[in-house]
Image (tube, rainbow, N blue to C red; front, top):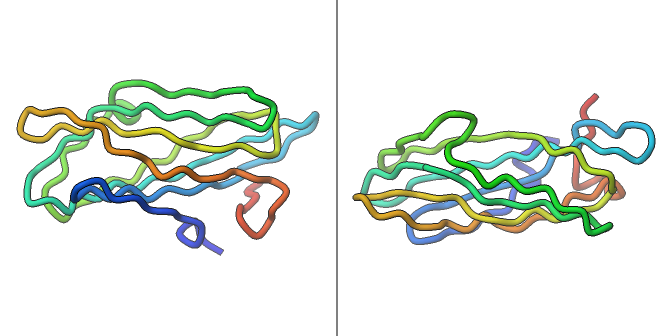
Length: 134
């Protein structure tokens, strides 16, 4: 099974964001290291720049992990029409189930806008939905 099997996609204008979970490790004492993958595709006729993100992971115990920052691991990718950018990161959680949601900040011709990231579930109880990587 690959990450691509679990992707959900959402289009805003001509920008498509595909996202999905990967359970990287299930540690002792109910700690879970979740990885997440995003692919941002520029299907517009104009060049865009990815300038930031604002996304959240909320677990079934009400705990919230937030990443609201400029750039993507120090990068401000510029995408020509037809190009895409892939991004992966990790979030330690203390619950088996959570939901990922948020947006990316995109600039085109000097105008900044938010592009929604599709909401997806992280569930360690459903092995068919997530890989465990040790």
